[in-house]
Length: 152
Image 1 (cartoon, one colour):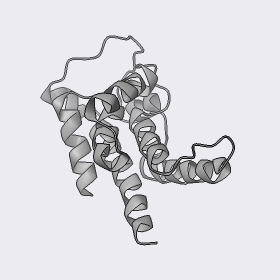
Image 2 (image 1 turned 60 degrees about the vertical axis):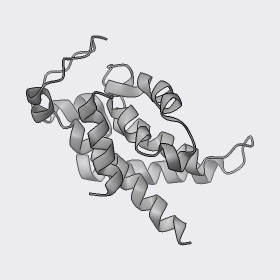
Image 3 (image 1 turned 90 degrees about the horizontal axis):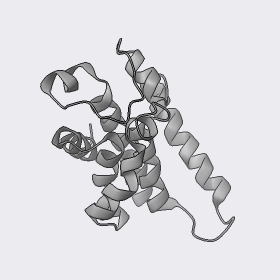
């Protein structure tokens, strides 16, 4: 596990959601402050506001990739960026079997709810959920890509 994976896990254990945890681990590299990172990424926790859609850790990973490698001119580099995002998502899916929060939870035998009320964090909460590993995987995947392309 990369240092970024460990940092992202630490944020989750502090109470940040999955998406926030991944993005917060890369604030410095992305050139954004913690408050902005938290505000941008908070809606994506729990698979988009606990709707159990795209895993929030994957959303955070994609935000990092967008901030580091995204384009700013209309249409310029869009296809290349989409290819990068697909590559990163495929790596996550290879490690975890799916990109979807609800399926990840069900794979651990958990029933899913789409209630907007977040569950209380406790040692039992962290122990039964796949979230810590998903967060670490998402951060590790984007960090490996970043480090590989620093030397190119």
